[in-house]
Amino acid sequence: MEYTSTRNNKIRVSSAQTISQGISKEGGLFVPCSFPQFSLETIKNMVSMSYIERAKLILKEYLTDFSEDEINYCVEGAYEASKFSSSKIAPVVNVNKNENILELWHGPTCAFKDMALQLLPYLMTVSAKKAADGKTIVILVATSGDTGKAALEGFKNVENTKILVFYPVDGVSDMQKLQMATQEGENVAVCAINGNFDDAQSAVKAIFTNDDIKDKLAEKNMMFSSANSINWGRLLPQIVYYFSAYCDMAEQRKINVGDEINFVVPTGNFGNILAAYYAIKMGLPVKKLICASNSNNVLTDFLTTGKYNKNRNFYTTTSPSMDILISSNLERLLYHISGDNDGLINELMDSLNSKGEYCVDEKMIADIKKYFSAGFATEGDVENTIREQFENYSYLLDTHSAVAVKVYLDYVNKTGDDVPTVIDSTASPYKFSKAVLNAVKSGNINSADEFDMVDELNKVSSLEVPEPLKSLKNKTVRFTDVCNKSDMSEMVFRLLKL
Ligand SMILES: *Cc1c(COP(=O)(O)O)cnc(C)c1O
Image 1 (cartoon, protein in one colour):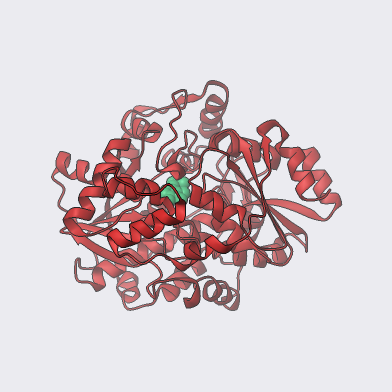
Image 2 (cartoon, rainbow, N blue to C red; image 1 turned 60 degrees about the vertical axis):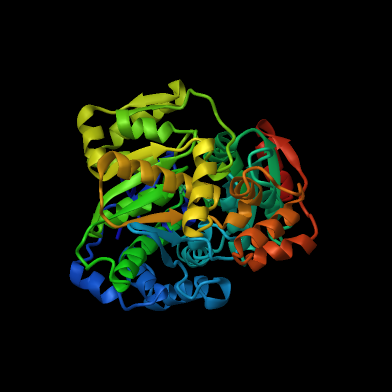
């Protein structure tokens, strides 16, 4: 398996290079040159497998420069039973009729990012040995909340790596902030920035591709890599749970192998839903991918009109991990849909950079619509959906997952589609206790303290509080730095003690 870049498709690199480098030199994103095919027969065989076995089968098709032992080591380490609060790793729960929830938050930081970021450090260290001759890998992360914590937890004390995380100072929940500020480990640092997620992401991308900074690092035998979903090593593990959810639906006899299902994905940077698209390219029978946005509905507009325009109000919502106006992984979709047209991608991305917008032609948006449908939920919708789903079905959703459920219900109303559907649930409701409690109790909350709210939500719902969140209460705050986005590169040097 070889990989190329969305902005220069003459490039050919191995998976080890793709993962250790993170982003291509000219700023493009790495994509596989082809997609391995999974027949219905193979999928049938996967139904009786464990999550770990399913993961191995998929990974070995993409990591052809890894030995079988290396793949086993990576997958078994990442999804070790003690790290996940569900033996299924990513269980599918039926809520009502065709509405099934794929719970992706049973990992150590209680958000779906763990699904990839428990595996990435293994992939990264194996890749670095093959492709980066012993250099220390410096992971730079821009986070809207969940990636930061999940990456810190995944990379903490991993040999030959350092990790620096930047998050928008007012753009994450109190629980997310506390999770990052109390992070343990010798090789970790965290800094807030005055700005939003897009500011953090743009600055991190600029640092990555800045030759002066790269040279300074190289002098110290260090190199940058990325744990954001621009890194292929983040997307690959996510393909697994689409196959796994499909197999679980078959195992639960909700479908027969070969039947189509829908997936609904609460979307920000387009990584999670892109992994679902890759699963389709590999042969998974899917009718529609439904892209769910919050009030920052730039993707809803794009997927309905073909016009991407980030020049609009930025809203800080109760689903902060989706407060994004520059959706990085869309670039990969555009590359594939356009028939690997790197020239077009350069044009579109230049336009996005200079004018904040781009437009694709009618054929292209029609091709995209064959796979994708889209909708968005307002803040009021999110609140009502959390309350109604809890009152009607005793199922407690977090704010991001509620966006997805609302968009799904709208989709069914509009289309009458009665195909069994799997909705990605991307975070534990306890990560967003304030908003969830507010919804469930219609604003009658007793306390303003984060941990009191967790307790209150636990009393109301009897849903168990995840251990990693409970234990935060007694941890020491280690990181309190805040910097301006223009000072981020300086901060990188300071944190790396260069
Ligand atoms: C990151 C995140 C999302 C968005 O995922 P993308 O891959 O960026 O589209 C949705 N919900 C939660 C809870 C997240 O942490």
